Image 1 (cartoon, rainbow, N blue to C red):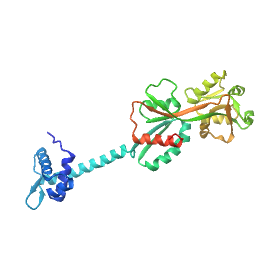
Image 2: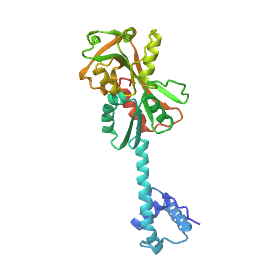
Image 3: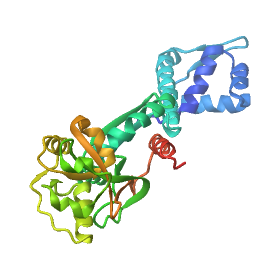
Image 4: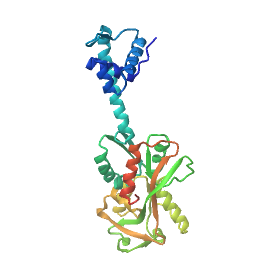
Length: 300
């Protein structure tokens, strides 16, 4: 039957083996000498061997004690190292942070957040998934991501918490030679005057534009449709039409041939926030990263 030794017993054994004196070892361990003796007797009883030879002057290891010595050192060292790693994890200094984010949000927010975060958390591994809203939510639900940076869920998500982070205004983009490029502002009703390029179904941009167009009584059949904002931007720059996108997404486009026109009547914003699972524990490393995001956006 395998003996169930404790780290406490092995540490006591190592102290005595190092100083070869029960009294000095008990002082180092801050226990009484009788208590230390009982601990060693318990250890010897579990192993079925004597570990020390004692006389009036010194304590020596028996052959069994010499055999146990390197094993005990390795076990205690590994335990201390593992406990140190655990302490750092609890303190948020080790572990991982996995984020699922809308591409535009990832490009706009995460580089600065990571740069600040890694200064105080250099040993935390950060994983990034740049995906549309529905796929970001799916990674959060299946446990791949610790949290998501996205718009509020479009459907009932009973197990998801959403905490607002910022608002991103919609703007109209067109080619620099397009007639709309001269406008100071544009209303949503004017989108019917030019060929319209739409974001793909299921994206947060498409959901919002469809909703606003319906609320303002506009009916638009997109001439082109793509889930790639980079492609839409290139097609707009080529003069193939216009579109409405959140301002933050401009970071993903080559804007050298684009004109950006603020929108009104009504002004529209994409709400963005932090999505987490209600049933999932967030490590200190994750919560501190979210704290950095909030602070950088003026939320704390």
